[in-house]
Length: 264
Image 1 (tube, rainbow, N blue to C red):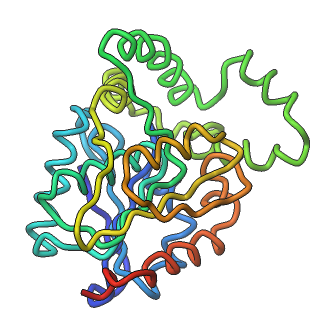
Image 2 (image 1 turned 90 degrees about the vertical axis):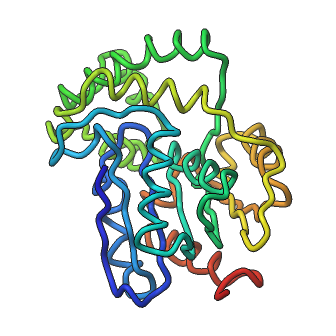
Image 3 (image 1 turned 180 degrees about the vertical axis):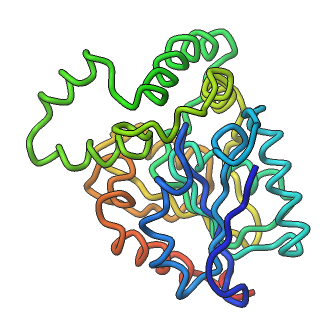
């Protein structure tokens, strides 16, 4: 696992957590320059998803403990904010509920927070894992997915193309990712439990709710977090981040200016 740091270390620290099988730079490279005037930015690069290492993704809790140790060592166990893109939202939730470190503002980036039993999770991972690895290694979508994408409305094409770039589609930059890393990241995200009604003194939870994903995701945010700050956007999954970076940065800044927890 690597931690990439940007900006003035005297500024409030924000951690950024990438999504499933995404490279940290593809996920956040466009917003880091916009954040670092206000924040000290730390971008996490998971085991198995950093080309500078020969590692494999172990499981969600092992990675969470590594992040906790890093925050304890370099930030005295306390940071201003953490934003989790998709899968990264699970890490934000786990870090908050475990209370080994303190995050003043936890931001859930239109994450699905999907969970399943071991059998169902294994079945899903065995289906999705090989397909994801083939996409990462070949840098292109399977034929049936390309045909499905072609049928999407014209005004949605830019969004889907940007989503594909997160996974390295169109290049070979993610060809180093192993089948084991993709499988375990997908599988352990499904089976690692996130508690209900999470409420930690001095922590605010901000959920970036992409309304086009559907109301069941709103219900999940309200299930897992007690009185979360719901930030509604008439958009699709992580569309705000990847298509409107300036608006996303302003939303993050607004979250960190909200509530009494900020600045303690």
